[in-house]
Image 1: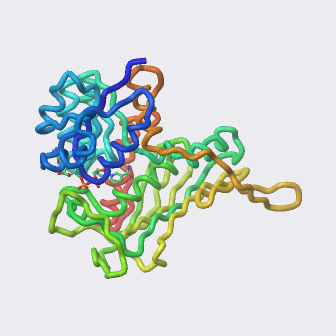
Image 2: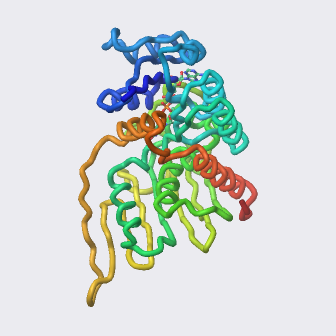
Image 3: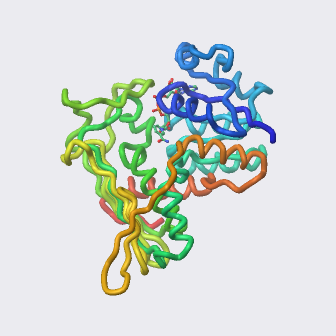
Length: 346
Ligand SMILES: NC(=O)c1ccc[n+]([C@@H]2O[C@H](COP(=O)([O-])OP(=O)(O)OC[C@H]3O[C@@H](n4cnc5c(N)ncnc54)[C@H](O)[C@@H]3O)[C@@H](O)[C@H]2O)c1
Protein backbone atom coordinates (compact mmCIF):
# COMPACT_ATOMS: atom_id res chain seq x y z
CA UNK A 1 0.00 0.00 0.00
CA UNK A 2 1.40 3.39 -0.99
CA UNK A 3 1.48 5.68 2.02
CA UNK A 4 0.12 9.12 1.06
CA UNK A 5 2.39 11.95 2.24
CA UNK A 6 0.48 15.01 3.44
CA UNK A 7 1.49 18.59 4.08
CA UNK A 8 -0.65 20.89 6.23
CA UNK A 9 -1.11 24.48 5.06
CA UNK A 10 -1.84 26.68 8.08
CA UNK A 11 -0.54 25.97 11.59
CA UNK A 12 -3.38 27.28 13.76
CA UNK A 13 -6.01 25.52 15.86
CA UNK A 14 -7.40 22.96 13.46
CA UNK A 15 -3.98 22.18 11.98
CA UNK A 16 -2.96 20.90 15.42
CA UNK A 17 -5.99 18.60 15.46
CA UNK A 18 -5.12 17.29 11.99
CA UNK A 19 -1.47 16.77 12.92
CA UNK A 20 -2.28 14.80 16.08
CA UNK A 21 -4.99 12.73 14.41
CA UNK A 22 -2.88 11.80 11.43
CA UNK A 23 -0.17 10.40 13.68
CA UNK A 24 -2.16 7.23 14.32
CA UNK A 25 -3.79 7.00 10.87
CA UNK A 26 -3.06 4.06 8.57
CA UNK A 27 -1.89 4.62 4.99
CA UNK A 28 -1.33 8.36 5.35
CA UNK A 29 1.39 10.41 7.00
CA UNK A 30 1.99 14.09 7.63
CA UNK A 31 5.51 14.98 6.50
CA UNK A 32 5.45 18.78 6.36
CA UNK A 33 3.79 21.94 7.60
CA UNK A 34 3.77 25.63 6.73
CA UNK A 35 2.12 28.85 7.80
CA UNK A 36 2.24 32.37 6.47
CA UNK A 37 3.70 33.17 9.88
CA UNK A 38 6.75 30.88 9.58
CA UNK A 39 7.48 30.73 13.33
CA UNK A 40 3.99 29.37 13.94
CA UNK A 41 4.69 26.31 11.80
CA UNK A 42 8.07 25.86 13.49
CA UNK A 43 6.38 26.03 16.88
CA UNK A 44 3.70 23.49 15.93
CA UNK A 45 6.24 20.72 15.27
CA UNK A 46 9.01 21.81 17.64
CA UNK A 47 8.82 18.59 19.67
CA UNK A 48 9.35 16.41 16.57
CA UNK A 49 12.04 18.23 14.55
CA UNK A 50 13.08 15.08 12.62
CA UNK A 51 9.58 14.06 11.56
CA UNK A 52 8.32 17.15 9.77
CA UNK A 53 9.80 19.59 7.31
CA UNK A 54 8.77 23.19 7.85
CA UNK A 55 8.27 24.79 4.45
CA UNK A 56 8.88 28.48 3.88
CA UNK A 57 5.32 28.90 2.59
CA UNK A 58 2.50 27.13 0.74
CA UNK A 59 4.16 27.73 -2.64
CA UNK A 60 7.32 25.89 -1.59
CA UNK A 61 5.23 23.06 -0.11
CA UNK A 62 3.07 22.44 -3.19
CA UNK A 63 6.16 22.46 -5.44
CA UNK A 64 7.83 19.78 -3.34
CA UNK A 65 8.02 16.25 -4.79
CA UNK A 66 7.91 14.93 -1.19
CA UNK A 67 4.25 15.94 -0.84
CA UNK A 68 1.32 14.06 -2.45
CA UNK A 69 -1.59 15.93 -0.83
CA UNK A 70 -2.32 18.94 1.33
CA UNK A 71 -4.81 19.78 4.07
CA UNK A 72 -6.15 23.33 3.92
CA UNK A 73 -6.22 24.41 7.57
CA UNK A 74 -6.41 28.11 6.71
CA UNK A 75 -9.18 30.70 7.25
CA UNK A 76 -12.15 30.41 4.90
CA UNK A 77 -11.03 33.23 2.57
CA UNK A 78 -7.85 31.26 1.85
CA UNK A 79 -9.58 28.01 0.86
CA UNK A 80 -10.11 28.98 -2.77
CA UNK A 81 -6.65 30.46 -3.50
CA UNK A 82 -4.82 27.67 -1.65
CA UNK A 83 -6.92 24.99 -3.36
CA UNK A 84 -6.16 26.44 -6.81
CA UNK A 85 -2.46 26.67 -5.98
CA UNK A 86 -2.31 23.06 -4.80
CA UNK A 87 -4.34 21.72 -7.74
CA UNK A 88 -2.18 23.56 -10.27
CA UNK A 89 0.83 21.83 -8.75
CA UNK A 90 -0.79 18.39 -8.91
CA UNK A 91 -1.47 17.98 -5.17
CA UNK A 92 -4.63 16.33 -3.86
CA UNK A 93 -6.57 18.49 -1.39
CA UNK A 94 -8.53 17.91 1.80
CA UNK A 95 -10.34 21.24 2.23
CA UNK A 96 -11.60 22.33 5.65
CA UNK A 97 -15.23 23.41 5.86
CA UNK A 98 -16.90 25.52 4.55
CA UNK A 99 -15.67 24.87 1.00
CA UNK A 100 -15.16 28.57 0.23
CA UNK A 101 -16.76 32.00 0.58
CA UNK A 102 -19.31 31.55 -2.21
CA UNK A 103 -20.58 29.16 -4.87
CA UNK A 104 -18.53 30.77 -7.67
CA UNK A 105 -15.33 29.98 -5.79
CA UNK A 106 -16.51 26.38 -5.25
CA UNK A 107 -17.12 25.98 -8.98
CA UNK A 108 -13.60 27.25 -9.74
CA UNK A 109 -12.20 24.67 -7.31
CA UNK A 110 -14.16 21.80 -8.87
CA UNK A 111 -13.03 22.87 -12.36
CA UNK A 112 -9.41 23.04 -11.20
CA UNK A 113 -9.61 19.55 -9.66
CA UNK A 114 -10.90 18.20 -12.98
CA UNK A 115 -8.44 20.16 -15.10
CA UNK A 116 -5.37 19.10 -13.13
CA UNK A 117 -6.61 15.56 -12.37
CA UNK A 118 -6.35 15.79 -8.61
CA UNK A 119 -8.67 14.35 -5.93
CA UNK A 120 -10.44 16.74 -3.60
CA UNK A 121 -12.45 16.07 -0.46
CA UNK A 122 -14.41 18.26 1.92
CA UNK A 123 -13.41 18.36 5.59
CA UNK A 124 -16.90 17.31 6.67
CA UNK A 125 -15.40 15.37 9.58
CA UNK A 126 -18.84 14.88 11.14
CA UNK A 127 -19.67 12.40 8.37
CA UNK A 128 -16.90 10.20 9.81
CA UNK A 129 -18.15 10.33 13.42
CA UNK A 130 -19.02 6.88 14.64
CA UNK A 131 -22.43 7.96 15.96
CA UNK A 132 -23.30 9.43 12.55
CA UNK A 133 -22.20 6.12 10.97
CA UNK A 134 -24.45 4.28 13.42
CA UNK A 135 -27.39 6.52 12.45
CA UNK A 136 -26.62 5.91 8.77
CA UNK A 137 -26.52 2.14 9.30
CA UNK A 138 -30.09 2.31 10.67
CA UNK A 139 -31.29 4.57 7.86
CA UNK A 140 -29.65 2.39 5.17
CA UNK A 141 -31.25 -0.70 6.71
CA UNK A 142 -34.65 0.98 6.25
CA UNK A 143 -35.32 1.05 10.00
CA UNK A 144 -36.78 4.58 10.06
CA UNK A 145 -38.49 4.36 6.68
CA UNK A 146 -38.37 7.56 4.66
CA UNK A 147 -36.30 10.24 6.47
CA UNK A 148 -38.42 13.30 5.70
CA UNK A 149 -37.41 15.98 8.23
CA UNK A 150 -34.40 16.96 10.32
CA UNK A 151 -34.32 19.33 13.26
CA UNK A 152 -31.02 20.62 14.60
CA UNK A 153 -29.69 23.13 17.11
CA UNK A 154 -26.06 24.02 17.69
CA UNK A 155 -26.15 26.83 20.23
CA UNK A 156 -23.50 28.37 22.48
CA UNK A 157 -24.47 30.92 25.11
CA UNK A 158 -21.27 33.03 24.73
CA UNK A 159 -18.82 31.39 22.37
CA UNK A 160 -17.83 33.65 19.49
CA UNK A 161 -14.32 32.74 18.34
CA UNK A 162 -11.89 35.64 18.08
CA UNK A 163 -9.95 36.78 15.02
CA UNK A 164 -10.86 36.26 11.36
CA UNK A 165 -13.98 34.21 12.28
CA UNK A 166 -15.86 37.45 13.04
CA UNK A 167 -14.81 39.30 9.89
CA UNK A 168 -17.41 38.54 7.24
CA UNK A 169 -15.01 39.26 4.38
CA UNK A 170 -12.67 36.53 5.63
CA UNK A 171 -15.15 34.03 7.06
CA UNK A 172 -18.21 34.44 4.83
CA UNK A 173 -20.40 34.55 7.94
CA UNK A 174 -20.71 33.61 11.59
CA UNK A 175 -22.09 30.56 13.42
CA UNK A 176 -24.19 29.42 10.46
CA UNK A 177 -21.19 28.94 8.16
CA UNK A 178 -18.93 27.83 11.03
CA UNK A 179 -20.92 25.38 13.21
CA UNK A 180 -24.25 25.23 11.40
CA UNK A 181 -22.50 23.85 8.33
CA UNK A 182 -21.45 20.68 10.24
CA UNK A 183 -24.92 20.04 11.64
CA UNK A 184 -26.78 20.85 8.44
CA UNK A 185 -24.34 18.81 6.38
CA UNK A 186 -24.52 15.74 8.63
CA UNK A 187 -28.33 15.83 8.65
CA UNK A 188 -28.52 16.39 4.88
CA UNK A 189 -26.05 13.51 4.36
CA UNK A 190 -28.09 11.17 6.57
CA UNK A 191 -31.24 12.12 4.67
CA UNK A 192 -29.53 11.02 1.44
CA UNK A 193 -28.44 14.48 0.16
CA UNK A 194 -31.80 15.47 -1.38
CA UNK A 195 -31.77 18.38 -3.86
CA UNK A 196 -32.40 21.70 -2.05
CA UNK A 197 -35.17 23.86 -3.52
CA UNK A 198 -35.57 26.88 -1.21
CA UNK A 199 -34.31 28.46 1.99
CA UNK A 200 -35.56 31.01 4.52
CA UNK A 201 -33.52 32.41 7.41
CA UNK A 202 -33.62 34.97 10.20
CA UNK A 203 -30.21 36.18 11.39
CA UNK A 204 -29.70 38.29 14.52
CA UNK A 205 -26.96 40.77 15.46
CA UNK A 206 -28.08 41.54 19.03
CA UNK A 207 -25.35 40.35 21.40
CA UNK A 208 -22.15 40.31 19.34
CA UNK A 209 -18.82 39.03 20.57
CA UNK A 210 -19.10 39.82 24.27
CA UNK A 211 -16.80 37.67 26.41
CA UNK A 212 -17.99 37.65 30.04
CA UNK A 213 -15.28 36.76 32.54
CA UNK A 214 -16.91 33.40 33.22
CA UNK A 215 -16.39 32.06 29.69
CA UNK A 216 -13.43 30.52 27.89
CA UNK A 217 -12.69 31.76 24.39
CA UNK A 218 -11.76 29.95 21.17
CA UNK A 219 -8.87 32.15 20.09
CA UNK A 220 -8.04 32.05 16.40
CA UNK A 221 -4.34 32.25 15.57
CA UNK A 222 -5.07 34.70 12.75
CA UNK A 223 -6.24 37.79 14.59
CA UNK A 224 -8.55 40.50 13.28
CA UNK A 225 -10.33 43.47 14.83
CA UNK A 226 -13.50 43.50 12.68
CA UNK A 227 -16.62 41.78 14.06
CA UNK A 228 -19.61 42.02 11.75
CA UNK A 229 -21.20 38.55 11.50
CA UNK A 230 -24.48 37.21 12.90
CA UNK A 231 -24.86 36.05 16.54
CA UNK A 232 -27.40 33.47 15.54
CA UNK A 233 -29.17 32.10 12.50
CA UNK A 234 -32.51 30.32 12.48
CA UNK A 235 -33.97 28.86 9.32
CA UNK A 236 -35.58 26.29 7.14
CA UNK A 237 -34.21 24.48 4.11
CA UNK A 238 -36.68 22.68 1.89
CA UNK A 239 -35.77 19.88 -0.49
CA UNK A 240 -37.35 18.04 -3.38
CA UNK A 241 -40.20 15.72 -2.42
CA UNK A 242 -41.19 18.02 0.44
CA UNK A 243 -38.31 17.09 2.76
CA UNK A 244 -36.90 19.71 5.11
CA UNK A 245 -34.31 20.69 7.69
CA UNK A 246 -35.00 23.26 10.38
CA UNK A 247 -31.89 24.58 12.11
CA UNK A 248 -30.61 27.04 14.69
CA UNK A 249 -26.92 27.96 14.96
CA UNK A 250 -25.51 30.47 17.41
CA UNK A 251 -22.32 31.66 19.09
CA UNK A 252 -24.17 34.10 21.35
CA UNK A 253 -27.69 33.45 22.58
CA UNK A 254 -29.28 33.24 26.00
CA UNK A 255 -29.38 29.48 26.52
CA UNK A 256 -27.88 27.67 29.54
CA UNK A 257 -24.09 27.82 29.70
CA UNK A 258 -23.48 24.25 28.49
CA UNK A 259 -25.14 25.22 25.22
CA UNK A 260 -27.42 23.03 23.15
CA UNK A 261 -26.42 20.34 20.68
CA UNK A 262 -29.40 18.64 19.16
CA UNK A 263 -30.05 16.57 16.06
CA UNK A 264 -33.24 14.64 15.31
CA UNK A 265 -34.14 12.86 12.09
CA UNK A 266 -37.78 11.96 11.65
CA UNK A 267 -38.79 9.05 9.43
CA UNK A 268 -42.04 7.34 8.51
CA UNK A 269 -41.21 4.19 10.53
CA UNK A 270 -39.01 5.63 13.27
CA UNK A 271 -36.74 8.45 14.37
CA UNK A 272 -33.11 8.93 15.34
CA UNK A 273 -31.74 11.28 18.01
CA UNK A 274 -28.02 12.03 18.11
CA UNK A 275 -27.57 13.42 21.64
CA UNK A 276 -27.79 10.90 23.28
CA UNK A 277 -27.93 8.39 20.45
CA UNK A 278 -31.36 6.77 20.29
CA UNK A 279 -33.60 4.92 17.84
CA UNK A 280 -37.28 5.75 18.46
CA UNK A 281 -40.20 3.76 17.10
CA UNK A 282 -43.60 2.27 17.72
CA UNK A 283 -43.55 -1.39 18.73
CA UNK A 284 -46.51 -3.52 19.65
CA UNK A 285 -48.74 -1.31 21.79
CA UNK A 286 -46.31 1.51 22.58
CA UNK A 287 -43.47 3.82 21.67
CA UNK A 288 -39.95 2.53 22.43
CA UNK A 289 -36.54 4.15 22.60
CA UNK A 290 -33.41 2.09 22.03
CA UNK A 291 -29.95 3.32 23.02
CA UNK A 292 -27.48 2.73 20.21
CA UNK A 293 -23.91 1.78 21.14
CA UNK A 294 -20.88 2.33 18.98
CA UNK A 295 -17.10 2.03 19.26
CA UNK A 296 -15.77 5.58 19.18
CA UNK A 297 -12.71 6.61 17.16
CA UNK A 298 -11.30 10.03 16.27
CA UNK A 299 -13.27 11.23 13.23
CA UNK A 300 -10.27 13.19 11.94
CA UNK A 301 -8.18 10.01 11.84
CA UNK A 302 -11.02 8.23 10.04
CA UNK A 303 -11.39 11.04 7.48
CA UNK A 304 -7.62 11.08 6.80
CA UNK A 305 -7.54 7.32 6.28
CA UNK A 306 -10.58 7.51 4.00
CA UNK A 307 -9.05 10.30 1.90
CA UNK A 308 -5.88 8.21 1.58
CA UNK A 309 -7.99 5.38 0.11
CA UNK A 310 -9.71 7.84 -2.24
CA UNK A 311 -6.33 9.07 -3.50
CA UNK A 312 -5.15 5.48 -4.03
CA UNK A 313 -8.32 4.84 -6.04
CA UNK A 314 -9.63 2.27 -3.57
CA UNK A 315 -12.97 4.00 -2.89
CA UNK A 316 -15.17 6.96 -3.75
CA UNK A 317 -15.09 9.99 -1.46
CA UNK A 318 -17.65 10.14 1.34
CA UNK A 319 -17.49 13.96 1.25
CA UNK A 320 -17.06 14.97 -2.41
CA UNK A 321 -16.41 18.56 -3.50
CA UNK A 322 -19.67 18.55 -5.49
CA UNK A 323 -21.60 18.17 -2.20
CA UNK A 324 -19.46 20.89 -0.60
CA UNK A 325 -20.62 23.18 -3.40
CA UNK A 326 -24.31 22.29 -2.91
CA UNK A 327 -23.91 22.98 0.80
CA UNK A 328 -22.38 26.35 -0.09
CA UNK A 329 -25.42 27.12 -2.26
CA UNK A 330 -27.68 26.47 0.75
CA UNK A 331 -25.50 28.69 2.99
CA UNK A 332 -25.30 31.48 0.41
CA UNK A 333 -29.09 31.33 -0.05
CA UNK A 334 -29.67 31.44 3.71
CA UNK A 335 -27.51 34.57 4.07
CA UNK A 336 -29.32 36.17 1.14
CA UNK A 337 -32.68 35.31 2.71
CA UNK A 338 -31.64 36.83 6.05
CA UNK A 339 -30.47 39.99 4.27
CA UNK A 340 -33.56 40.44 2.10
CA UNK A 341 -36.20 39.02 4.45
CA UNK A 342 -37.45 36.81 1.62
CA UNK A 343 -37.48 33.12 0.87
CA UNK A 344 -34.75 32.31 -1.67
CA UNK A 345 -35.40 29.77 -4.40
CA UNK A 346 -32.21 27.83 -5.14
N1 LIG B 1 -13.61 20.61 11.11
C1 LIG B 1 -13.78 21.32 12.21
O1 LIG B 1 -14.44 20.89 13.14
C2 LIG B 1 -13.14 22.69 12.31
C3 LIG B 1 -12.94 23.30 13.56
C4 LIG B 1 -12.32 24.54 13.61
C5 LIG B 1 -11.93 25.18 12.43
N2 LIG B 1 -12.19 24.58 11.22
C6 LIG B 1 -11.82 25.25 9.95
O2 LIG B 1 -10.39 25.23 9.84
C7 LIG B 1 -9.93 26.40 9.17
C8 LIG B 1 -8.89 27.10 10.03
O3 LIG B 1 -9.47 27.47 11.29
P1 LIG B 1 -8.53 27.67 12.59
O4 LIG B 1 -9.44 27.70 13.75
O5 LIG B 1 -7.41 26.69 12.59
O6 LIG B 1 -7.95 29.15 12.31
P2 LIG B 1 -6.65 29.78 12.99
O7 LIG B 1 -6.75 31.25 12.83
O8 LIG B 1 -6.47 29.23 14.36
O9 LIG B 1 -5.45 29.23 12.07
C9 LIG B 1 -5.33 29.58 10.72
C10 LIG B 1 -3.84 29.61 10.36
O10 LIG B 1 -3.73 29.74 8.93
C11 LIG B 1 -2.62 30.60 8.67
N3 LIG B 1 -2.72 31.09 7.29
C12 LIG B 1 -3.60 32.00 6.79
N4 LIG B 1 -3.43 32.14 5.47
C13 LIG B 1 -2.40 31.32 5.14
C14 LIG B 1 -1.74 31.03 3.91
N5 LIG B 1 -2.11 31.60 2.76
N6 LIG B 1 -0.72 30.14 3.92
C15 LIG B 1 -0.33 29.55 5.07
N7 LIG B 1 -0.92 29.79 6.26
C16 LIG B 1 -1.94 30.66 6.28
C17 LIG B 1 -2.72 31.66 9.74
O11 LIG B 1 -1.48 32.34 9.91
C18 LIG B 1 -3.12 30.82 10.97
O12 LIG B 1 -1.98 30.37 11.68
C19 LIG B 1 -11.19 27.23 8.90
O13 LIG B 1 -11.64 27.00 7.60
C20 LIG B 1 -12.22 26.70 9.90
O14 LIG B 1 -13.55 26.84 9.44
C21 LIG B 1 -12.75 23.35 11.15
